Amino acid sequence: MSFEKFGLAPRLLKGVKSMGYQKPTPVQQDAIPPALMGRDVVGCAQTGTGKTAAFVLPALQLLGHRRKVGVLVVTPTRELAQQIEEVARHCARFTGHKVMAVYGGVNYNPQAARLRRGIDLLVATPGRLLDLHRRGDVDLGSIEMLVLDEADRMLDMGFWPDVRRIIRVLPKKRQNLLFSATMPPQVMAVIGTELNQPCRVEIGRSAVPVEAIDQAVYPVDSRQKSELLAALLEKRGLDRVLVFTRTKRRADNVCRDLVCNGIGAVPIHSNRTQAQRRTALEGFKNGKYRVLVATDIVSRGIDVDNISHVINFDMPYRREDYVHRIGRTARAGSSGTAISFLAAEETAELRNIEAMIGFTLKCNDLEGFNYTQRLLSNPKRQAKKIRRLVYNGGALSGRRRRRRRTPVGTSV
Ligand code: AMP
Image 1 (cartoon, rainbow, N blue to C red):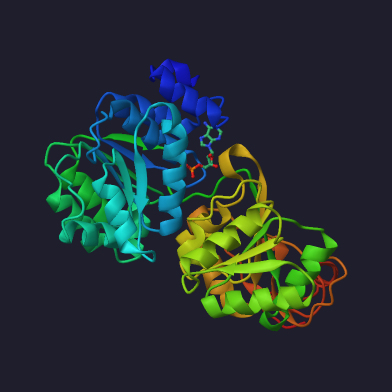
Image 2 (cartoon, helix red, strand yellow):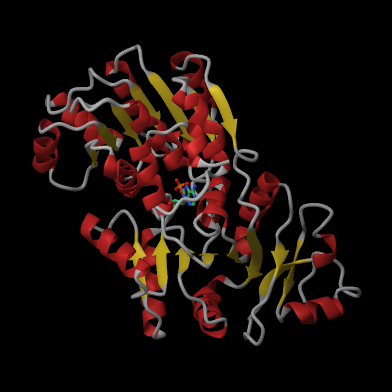
């Protein structure tokens, strides 16, 4: 399968080639043809599958040059909006379409002024778009195609009422493309009422992690997590590592500890300004920082190639976030590694994640690391069912030697 087979305009194909894409990814193969035929499409696909180009290419192919917003892409975060804008700009490099992203956290007036000069494809976060609409700075009356990107995330982040408000002001006759990693009932409801016999495209089972990712759990006492992280980075010589924490404060603390250990690290979370986030991402991309420490809210906006490892410093509260987090590595077919630090108090989260992904995660150790007492699973039981956990003060190998004599559930 090649991009030429889609019958895309030569200028659009030139843009695709300039991005270095050789052949379409599965989601592109499945979603582009029906979208080009004008059909509504529901794509169940995670970030990392190439879904952005799957909606940007048909959008640009079908879009005129009227300098009125013809395609509207609604997405939850500024980072995602910027990334979609970047992909769309690249694809539109030779087509002459005007592309722009609007999002909160930056000055309103320059965005409004640029919109007034005329835009063909608009990417927007819900809040800023509604502001612009309320103040009469954007005309949504010419929309021919609506793309809802990461619909489940917009729901999680509380944007759903805004999304519904936006849908209400759009022309009834339009094409709809909806992408979501999971399909919660509220999203399904929109599909049922707003969409016209959509073509469903499902890449893998929804919310199943990308298979190429090697995943392991590292049991550790919560007080030793920082120490283990620094030791892991140093001993294994890891570069381009994305670390996730549960809270913004923990992200800042982890960064501080890494920097104290002489490891270049930078935080990215919603308390950081737009400029700080951009500098952090750029510094991480160009190798100034080995480690980027993030919270879940910003995780989907992180589109950096060649992230070798994702480390869950803390288990995510929500099991779906596990998938989104580890999806930052192994982008578009390359392989990656995901390591999750597991403290005793996080076993419920681990069970939840394993129940969702349908298999137990293997346990691993950092050789030579001086572990204090921690919670360990009984490796013998792993393959069969969700594990009961036992305390273990030493390394995994020590536990293995003793396991025949030690009943499950005891402290050793
Ligand atoms: P997305 O799922 O849209 O966030 O895309 C994930 C990554 O895959 C981005 O870095 C894209 O540039 C890249 N990508 C998208 N489509 C292709 C393709 N056909 N070939 C190679 N890389 C791609």
